[in-house]
Picture 1 (cartoon, helix red, strand yellow):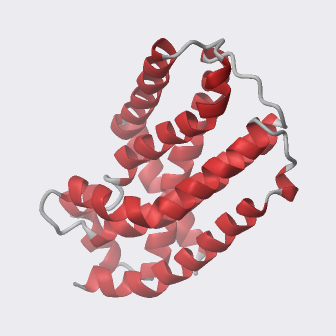
Picture 2 (picture 1 turned 180 degrees about the vertical axis):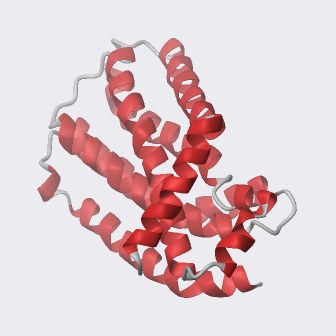
Amino acid sequence: MNPLLIYRIVCKDLKSELRGKETINFMFLFSFISLLMFNFAADPFSPALTEVGPGLLWFVFIFTGMLGLSRAFIKEKETGTLEGLLLAPVSTEDILYAKTFYNLLLMLGIQLIAFPLFIVLFNYNIAGSALDAFIVLALGNIAFVVVGSFMSALVMNAKSRELVLQIIVLPLLLPVIILTIISLRKVMIAGVNLLSIGEVKLIVFYVAIMAVLASILFEYIVEE
């Protein structure tokens, strides 16, 4: 792994995104409209909202992330820059890590905006620490990005790529979806301290396993 090369690829992707702002604007707009829609569909002062709030919040991030991840490698394939990266003196692992880190920056950027927006719109009173809830969301997003970035590379040559990506990613993400919701409920509803939540450790373990598998298999995927 070469951190300098990873940094340069991430900078290239960020500069490209900041020039067009297509993906980040679409992700932000989708997350904002989703939260606004749920806000009008539910009574912000209803006790029932306390119970379903963590699930609604995580739902918004899952489907917002799908919009960004679907473009991770597909955009590179369409513009021909992926071939250039493969011909350059850059390892396939560095390409995967750079794409994963870039997608993570997008997701964390959306999280920085959408999380406080959720609290304000729904008048949500977090029983535990807001920082702990933010960290749980960040861990869930890390797992989501690790799996999603790898799967995006897997389907980049398929027809109806965006649809295929959602079909194969969601089953793989089911453990993360469940564990993250349970962790969020413990922090936001029960007020449990982050370090006392066993599901958080399982999320970290899942991320480690999927990161190793992605590193091993990515080279064979891009050679196809």
